[in-house]
Image (cartoon, rainbow, N blue to C red; front, side):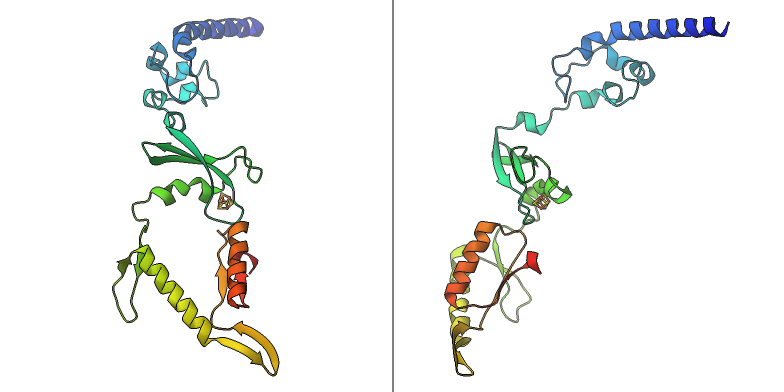
Length: 223
Ligand code: SF4
């Protein structure tokens, strides 16, 4: 008796499943089973419980709303993809930057990067926010000594001011000798690099500051 009931129930489950499959086949077999592109079909009008007969875990199409099925990934509609490196830290994970209409629309991990092999940590994965944030400062900001206001400077003016200060500090802190020992160095400035600097940038910074006579040259990643 028990076995008969079980057989009947299994038969009725199979029949229900076949009925749903027949109704849903047209839309489930659409050419793009991934993100978007599918034309809403009869399956979209079925209650979620019935849709789950084809998707028992409810992790696939049964969980998709009609709106979700019409959504297309930004990575599919981009005009071009530019390879880049995450700007946040010295790991230097590879990124693919998706561009549409000259604007960054998405940033993903680059599977071809030997360093990260397609992975990004949460900071790197959110770096589109860094690029496109309307609060991002894109000009040189300067606050004069004693002032309470920031002002914009053009880059050439700012670079000249930096160069003047470097020359002045180098001269003011220059040491030819210390305790009778020849030093030929400046104690007027030091360099502290950030973790976002890559190998090439650190190499150039070390060359520059050593040639200027600085002795304290360090990077935040080593501290
Ligand atoms: S911040 Fe994260 S994603 Fe960016 S380089 Fe460092 S580890 Fe990689």
